Image (cartoon, rainbow, N blue to C red; front, side, top):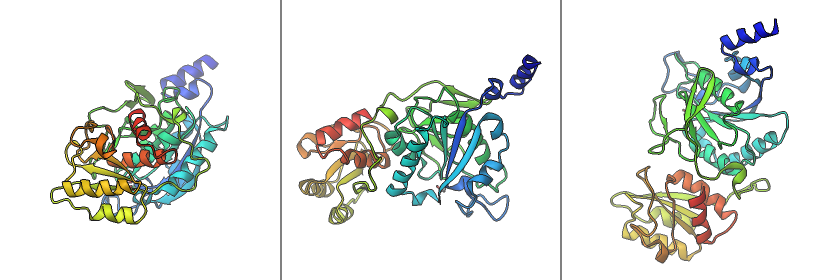
Length: 350
Ligand code: SIN
């Protein structure tokens, strides 16, 4: 009888249940479009993000109960453009607390897509566990025709409860694709296939109620990083400057005057900087600000001592990190050291 029951369960595609135990997955809700509501079912622009609570998100996907024991916590309720350092610290601490519990197998975080890649990378560097952490979002609000939130949440819960995701670092899962936190970025303002890991590629698919991995990041993450935010309630101030034709030094000077400890400059091409910008960055460096040279292109390695003699200026290069992720690594690096050689090592490690 039991064998017949197991065969039926396998046939209807409920693998975890068929194995007799369901993973325990906690869903931490932070807001975003996945929790958004619009005036009508065709409202996919001009809706309000961060309206629906975590219990309603869970109730909207009854299939979750078949693949995991889920419970939810509303950690915050924001549109993700309002995500900030303090919220990241709160989230990282809660994730670490939960993952230290024997009765938690994995975590799903629901999040707005605009800064999902930044939260993912922050957690990738600060979560101290090999257990899966999966961040999901949606491009269409919960009230829309073909809302993508429910399927993304369903896939995220399966992924967070899977043994395949253990030790893979923080993952971002939307549109049936699994991306790694370090390399994923939002590439389109509106379409459901917006998340890409340019050049380097996504890690795998969610299909047929299962995670299928084909690659993984070679960079250190989670339990293998040197960063510990458990006793921090603040991060060093780091901002981003952006290169263009006719670039000027106004923003850089303002950031330094405001007390920034680090600056990331998303330069043109291979991280090149207009002469006036470089002079302002040199002046910032003289005041003790650590300068990281990144690129606005969004792809490729910023070559050390290429467009700029980094040894001479004592700048750090961002490797392949985009400016918003370089900002995160620089903040965390500055919690450990101001030594630019050591910070450069970190940029080649994470
Ligand atoms: C947000 O990032 O909170 C709004 C946009 C989205 O979730 O897609």
